[in-house]
Length: 177
View 1 (tube, rainbow, N blue to C red):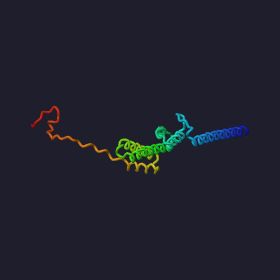
View 2 (view 1 turned 45 degrees about the vertical axis):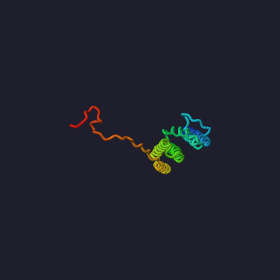
View 3 (view 1 turned 135 degrees about the vertical axis):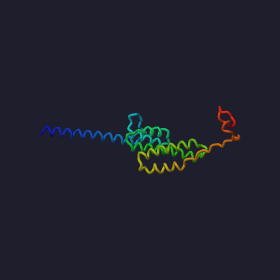
View 4 (view 1 turned 30 degrees about the vertical axis):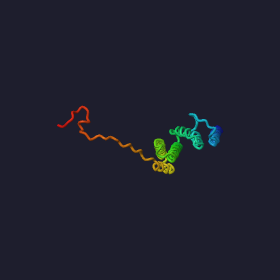
């Protein structure tokens, strides 16, 4: 009986130590997330800290680094975090496309259309992971609305006349039957 009580008390002590250590890890993670400027991202950095660092970059205007970090979260284990990363990537691309569309219009067609297409792709992926994300639905609809019209192809200035089909196929003799 005494031996059983001793084993149970050791198990309880082990559980308390384990949960205390987990609480310490969570508190450390919380303190680190509060100041993401001090986070150095490498392959061992938890995904949530990478996301926090990417958000900080986005807020400070360093969208290139934010895009790189969000893109690194495409294979994150947490599907909610992946959906948020896709949503934020779409927002960065949509914002950039809308700014260029308003500033340059059709003159910057290639850049605007590529940014809008990237935004739509990321919003679709975010909606695939989280169909209840109404912000992504709204932004995807907005991206569809501001998609620039396709560029018109220049009209051909060919002035030739319509000839016989035989004369345009190489190797066939011209003329009739």
